[in-house]
Image (cartoon, rainbow, N blue to C red; front, side, top):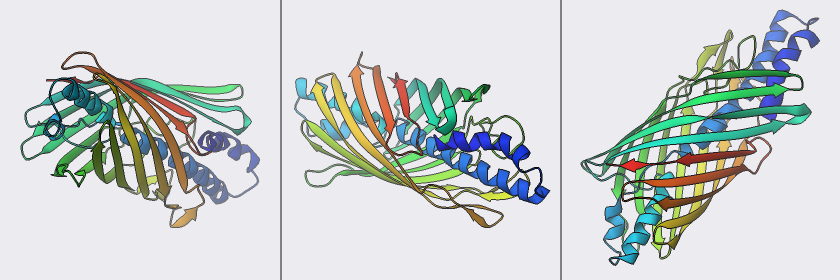
Length: 329
């Protein structure tokens, strides 16, 4: 992965450019750090896309027959858990422990492996609304040939509020809006001297999104549009302003049995230019993922969901695996 390749240059730049002025050296290091930062932000955007948001059963049950069809709807609901397609019913609480692992690679033998547990809490509110909070704990290893660094710590805390603006009808899809904030609580040393650590995105961000779903038994089609804006910060003596990220995600879920389902989705992101002290830094402007997932209802309140995402472009992680066990009260 090019992010890791760029990270290694942070070590080599100090030696290769010793004859340059201090300002030139700082500028080169900052530009490499910007590339690393953008790669980490792409991962953060993917994490948001994979973060569950439970689909309420009410909208689906209104049009479903009883018994077997109702069971099928519950399986489809679990399948849509990751699509931010609806909200919890009022008074319902969901607690979800999860585990995430990812692998990235780049030229010259660069590798980044990360894994760790996470916890997400959701609460359904009156008026078809929902609040959500999540936080991961990340273990990370970055290697470059014979050199490697290990780190671990709390990742970025995220908060979100959702509202269902329109329920699904015979002709129209359901529509849900989401407003989220991600704090830069995870350690990130992209613009600092020393070993590279990327437990978080490095910049606070605000995201707005809209999701729609439409049933065509036994299928459910879903899609979403999103926009993420990062707040500029002073880092390593530079004023860094990451570019905005615009996302498109669409896919299909299939009820394979009353208590199981499968789904597939494609996620695309377009990235604006990052600026350091007002000067643009060249970065790749698009990335894409292919996602494959499955859900199974274990008990009336508990399910298991597995989601695998593979990078389709050279500037994305090679793969990402997420296993979650949401429990509803």
